[in-house]
Length: 269
Image 1: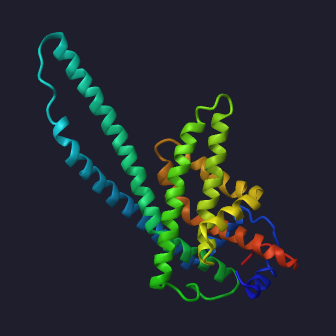
Image 2: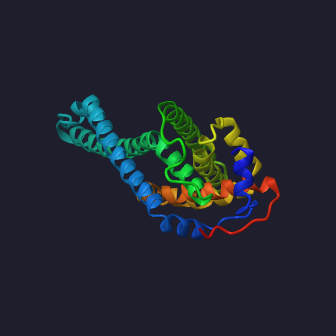
Image 3: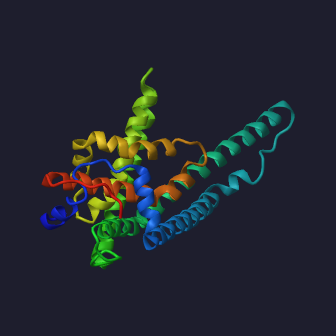
């Protein structure tokens, strides 16, 4: 955000916390913004489903022959082989489906990053009285840059998952550590959108989250909580992504505008 934009946004915000209810009201009151959010939800769902089916077809093509026929055998040994094969097949199907679904969602997240950057940018423009869509719109170079940034965040997400897996085994405090890890990663994931429109590097985004860790915790708390709901978490996250994007964008603007020291107003546009 350049100096002129900061000065303009400071007329409305000055480091104040924007509640989720205010962000929801802002999203609902602006039909074009809401329509873009719903379009992104549908696109994310479609890409996730296509990616999931493709991953399952690939897995079945590589391993399908092994699970087509149970092992031949007679007597007690044959019975043990058959039940062992069935148990292995059940675990394999369960694990591969879950992994394929999450990887497909991660891919969809990366591919829709330019759209969510547009949603974030449009949120800022509308809040400051600018036109929709955001000035400049899409460009090939911008889309490629946003895709690359989305892939970076996705890779960080994989690393975070690995770290959280090991942290889960820490006695007593393991679950709390895991929740904190996912909370701050969730904040980084949504801060990525308004920060990417400013062409910030991944390192600068991480430094922002660390520097404003109290606000980052508040921004990431609910997404992290939703992500831990078994089975339905990914659907809730997809549905709430536009709201969390708008919510984080408004609070990101508030933090950045707070450096100007001008009077603040609550978001009532």
